[in-house]
Length: 60
Picture 1: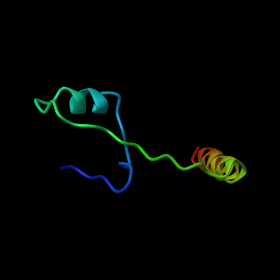
Picture 2: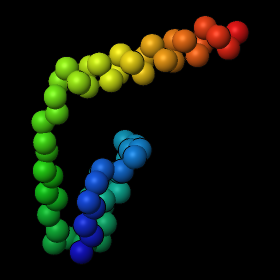
Picture 3: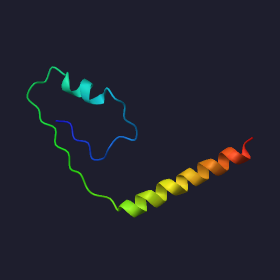
Picture 4: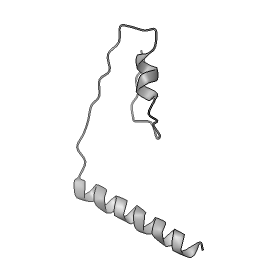
């Protein structure tokens, strides 16, 4: 049994392929998805973008 309590910090395109090509044929994958506050996520990403822009401008 393999249980993951949280998502990995990084993913790559071949992860599902590696999992589904295992010799184990009797398995199931269950995913629980929770909705996030859209405005909070937009504000967080905009803040990260502004911080990155500031860093780029001052690193020249």
